[in-house]
Length: 249
Image (tube, rainbow, N blue to C red; front, side):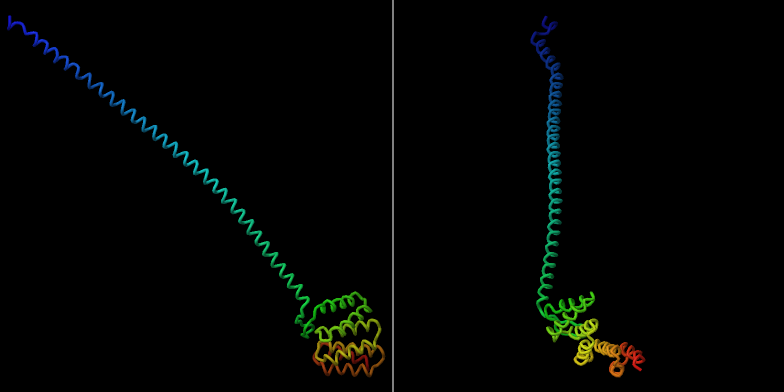
């Protein structure tokens, strides 16, 4: 009996061992699923984190791009303002330069100036040039009476002027135009006496000779023409005087 049937303890032990062996594989499978799920969750968390970081980076780049555009606009605005200021400064500088040039010109009108007239150098007083030009314009306009009066006033007012011999020459011409032969001859004679080397001197002598010829004073005219040829030989006026000699023979 003892050897034919195993004891209940042995049977129970075998059953327990079998149950343990059967349960072992099932426990391992549950463990693998949990690990895989945990790994997936970790990856998902990391992916979400990376997505958040990427979105944040994109927002940062967009913000920086917008800020860069704003800075570019500010730079363009400042550049335009700088160009406007540069133009304003250039305009102001030109206006200032023109102002001082005009002021200097105005002041010079009230100061004596060194000037050369028909080869004669001298000091020109304020208003002197304007007075001479005014008389000359009257002569050019054919107003010989007014021109003669203006040149007379000029000659008396500016005795040291470099315009003096030229003014006397045209005064003589104005008097001649008014048929004042005696007065014109006297003026021209004074010019030749006072300024014998002036370019207008031989012209004044030739004008005197013409006066003398028109008045029938051939001897006096011949003497005047000879003076021109002798004293101003080689000049164009001397050549003219030589050709006029035939009129007094």
